[in-house]
View (cartoon, rainbow, N blue to C red):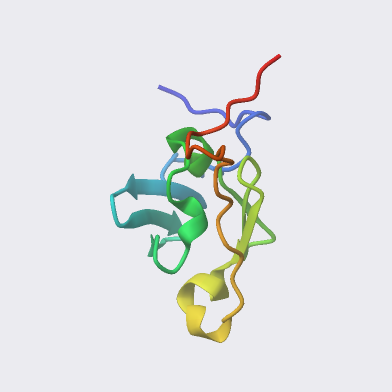
Length: 113
């Protein structure tokens, strides 16, 4: 079986043997996500990184490694540097996850055509 790099799926770079993946989402748990970046594993808890909670599996898996240290989730518009993950205490300012719009009755608003 041969692997070939697709122009559509640029988030993973395969070595000649197909074993060296630059970035991949390894697991999504109720507490956070596990990612593997440049042969090192990281846990992104929803407490520290709340913008990943309640996102689709597809959107979380669609991650790109840019410049060797910058992670980008295009569907979620999230940018993180490896240092943000390794030392989150150095970055106290955090954006809050977007909440769903609700009506006055508390029901979720759905866009209609």
